[in-house]
Length: 202
Ligand code: SF4
Image (cartoon, rainbow, N blue to C red; front, side):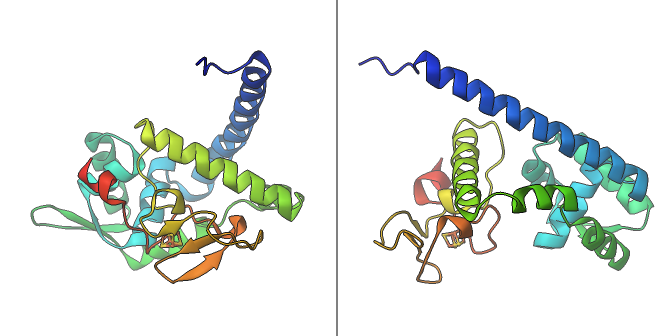
């Protein structure tokens, strides 16, 4: 059976990719504007945000989570330590923890830019749901191909039961909290996430 995408589907895929690239450009500009405001590089900001969300972490865990090399993570952590924003706790492995000043700065920079939230707010709730559903599927696909690190999202969680309820507003089920939920509540970074067994083994 021929599973190659038709020409029309390919053209739509390219339009979506062009749209994502434009949004990526806006986010990159914003990341560099933030560098002017905070003195942090995008990688340093991401490390602080990660430590704020998950607590102290090893160098390898930080590098893996942000999909950067160990030397890049190590250099960024050294810069953050020199600024008094993280502490390096010696041991095997060495653990990096945010200081109070680091947590305060991470909290200040954690908010998404207003212009981005306003643009998303202009979408209808249905379009927001469809967008989130599409993004979730894309991230899951990129994860399966090893192009981005595994994110703690519903699509790859052992507790996720998609489309098991008749209610179109809340068709999915989270077996962790044992409750139904809808596309608008699909999580992309959930602290209760656990890998599926075959993914743990792989
Ligand atoms: S535990 Fe979190 S990631 Fe897993 S299904 Fe429930 S809400 Fe989604």
